[in-house]
Amino acid sequence: MQAKALILDAAQKRLDAVGPEGLKVAEIANIAGVTHSTVLHHFGSAEGLRASLAEKMVEKLLGDILEVLDTGSIVTSDHKVLFRVFAVLSDEGNARLLAWTMLKGLELKEGQDTLAQLFEQLAQGVKVAILAANEGDITEATALRHAKYTIFQVALTAIGDGVAGDYISKLLGLEPVEAKAEFRDWFAERLLSSGN
Image (tube, rainbow, N blue to C red; front, side):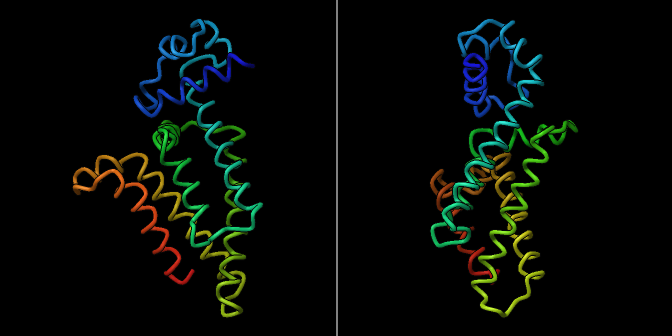
């Protein structure tokens, strides 16, 4: 079990630098300090390693969001959920991995169901926040629709940011802090002021 965790750790670090296609079994084995055959034993192939990384990303996203849900804070001025979604989906190469997985037509296996459950829980939590913010001026069905649209917008933006954010921000002449923290803050403010 320890070797598997070391391999996944090494692969996660390389993912951000080289993207999913650049993950080579021999290179990951070298970084993790294990043999090539150990990587193959745990993951079967580079594709198996990528799939396991995608599963790990889903688990992290689930854990992070559930932690925020436990605090009762969904849509607040500190944008906890938004920043967590952005951090997990956009940063560390996860958006590229997720996009690669989808473009290849690969399934996340158990992660697909986990992700669906996560988004359902998140939608219910955001719905509650929307109902509270609108104090009876909105139906539950409308609040749930707004919640799902908000999550859809955040997820698509985070994945787009992770796949093409660096490239587009350079074209626009944005500094790294503007393209990351300041953009995320601006985006969260727009979500909150849009009358969810």
